[in-house]
Length: 185
Image (cartoon, rainbow, N blue to C red; front, top):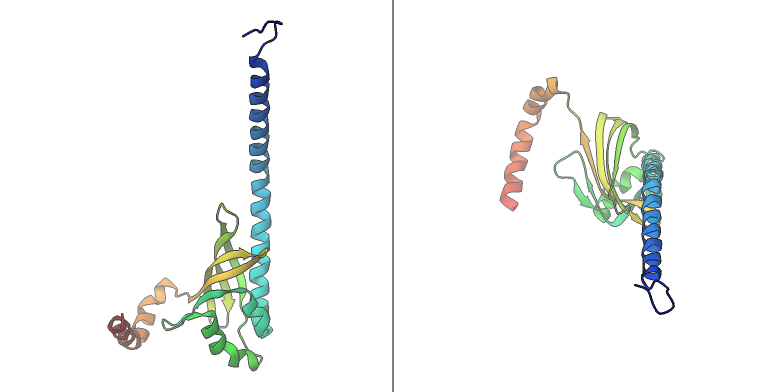
């Protein structure tokens, strides 16, 4: 549409629309290109955090170890009765740390996954431990620019060819425990 002076009144609107479209496209392109780097950086931070977490236990550094948990963090251990909040886990483990003999776990394989929000992650890893191979898994949240454990689950692994033998070994104790758990729930 041309005005009295012959100028196009649609041109300024189209010009703005094109600029907005270019700006949004540029933002999208930058977001897309920065995501893999952000993911790589976050995975590296988490891997370093988990290694430091394990080293703190190996050094029996109680405060450093428990600083890796959120205040409402949960620990699930290898025994079916070991589901503790942070405070309970601290109370249970304090004597081990006080003796200077906590546990010494080293990751031998690790997989880290990130939520699209960038402030939550989960992982699973195989660990070399005094119990031989164990599996650690958990949920992490980013708090004040630091990754913290919201939940950590430690499991022993059992080779498939030994499952029947292990099942026989634990049947009496765990049958009793299952009855108790079912009764209380």
